[in-house]
Image (tube, rainbow, N blue to C red; front, top):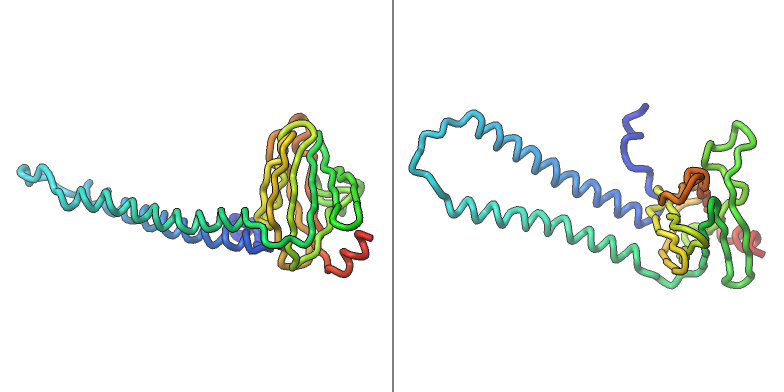
Length: 220
């Protein structure tokens, strides 16, 4: 296994890029704190407590109260920025509705011409991706603002594609939405991320990103 497989998947959307940057930012702070605490523990273990008159130190107590607050501030600000940007809808050109079923997905395109199909897992040849291949792929144009709408017909599901930085619950009787902007053409895969019954692991998601002109021909 290569060391690169231990990291996050390559980002193909602005949201995922920001999530990767935030991960690196948070890890830099955590590693710095770990090094500082390790140094302090090492110093305490080797120190000889011979000053019996030092019972308190108000300045030290003040700083070790203020410093964690400052660290939390530097973590919270970029986190809130990403949360708000992920929920923002910026004039979507296309709406795709995804409905979760036990145990498959159905999709609806209803902007101009209505198109509806179901997507089941398949494994017909050795060339297929195991537990990820589907008979009907979702198609979406890249560099186009997309609104994803999620719901469910039975139990809780979760529509997730890690490399696009999108994960949204599909709740029965409720509609959730999320924005999506794909930066490059390609084939992106995910799975249901909410335990939804016996065949939970057999309802994959496969999204194909294509040119806008090809998408218009396909939708017509």
